[in-house]
Image 1 (cartoon, rainbow, N blue to C red):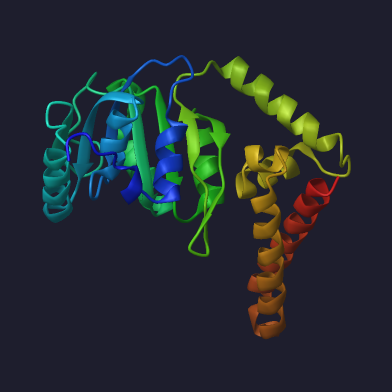
Image 2 (tube, rainbow, N blue to C red):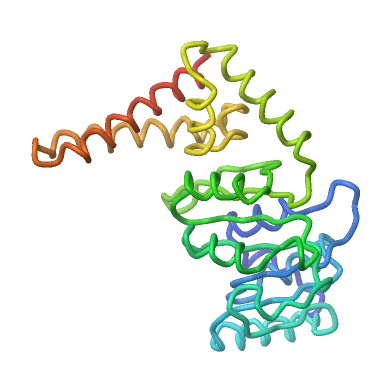
Length: 262
């Protein structure tokens, strides 16, 4: 199967995650694929010319052995290395300039990114796709000095996914200029909000998804509204904290939907 494409075995989510890493200049990357599972993403990256090499890493020996078998089957042992590793702990400095982590919980991914010390390793670009705690994760990236340059939405098997493309070394003044412009674009349609309100909305739903008015985001918001309204009906006065939380989320959904409909 050395010349067979891996694409037929890839989900839409994994293809999107891999393609988001593609360098616009055509430069081939050296990628660390953390939590590689079956190794399909690493194989796709090399086959499609996105990467010249990859280090496929997993904390579990079972999936890593399966990835090794797949890499061998596709004739890519010279380009893809497998490595047992908790996150990025076994990656050497300068071994990769790009990173993919997809399909983990947001809190776990925060730990791996923080412990990994991406800048010190030489990672300049990453595609990160957390499964949970999205608002907190976006805020974490900003607090760590990273910048989300793109974000996509994927609906697959009834579940929404939000892969984010991140750069680690953008100058602070450039980040602030882009953020200010994005905030202005939002406030131009709704001046009742504050700067802090818009940043909260960006953290909750993704600035790129909002500003491009992604149709999938509208579906996501409408579904979220239904869920929140249903939860509110089931709560009594013994859950005042939860009621306040749900009402705040409904308010944010309303602001976001208003922007989407402008």
